[in-house]
Amino acid sequence: MSDNDLKTNDLDLNDPKDFNGEAPDDINENDSLPDEDAVTSKDDSESTGGNDYSYGGNTPNNDAMYKAAVKKHTRTIIIEILVISSLINGGFFPIINLNPDNPVDIGLLRLFLIAVAVAYQAEAGSLESLAFAKSPMIKIWGFNLLPSLIGMVCRYFIEFGEVSNTYNFTVPNILAQALILSLIPTIVCFFAKKRREKKRSA
Figure 1: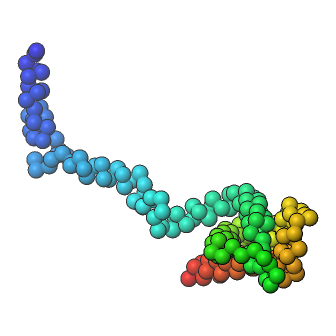
Figure 2 (figure 1 turned 180 degrees about the vertical axis):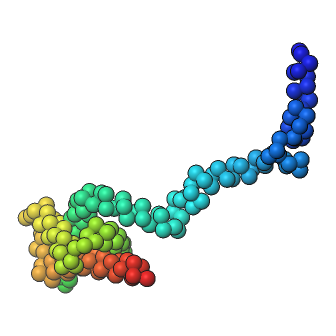
């Protein structure tokens, strides 16, 4: 090992005078190396732009990303709403049986099915407020009415010839099903649009 190596190992990096015996102009004797935690914190802040983009954070960025995702996949979302709503309308028909001669009474299960159907239709309306952002409400209501009709037609042919069709497919049941499950998402969509317009004008 040479003498130069020994001298280098003895250098105190925090002592500016150990640089060839002279202190550089831009180093003060009272200066010290930056704290490692401070450097790491600064780098993290710079890499994220100083904002919190964590999932689920209540930030404008998350809301903008959600809207952008819905607009990007609008066609897929519309198809999914149409298919799932048709299945719900057909499977849950009649969601409210207004036929006094109906012999079927499933009690609490009926209430559970109603709650599930209403919750889904409300969520569909929220998505529609973005997917149909520029569409008139009458068009959105027509879109929501379509799966009601498709679901009931499918249900009718699935149970064609069965006794259940005689007490399920009555005029009051058909009208109630079509109106209730088409108006819920339409009303939710309407108020979601109004709320968004207020935020923009504020």
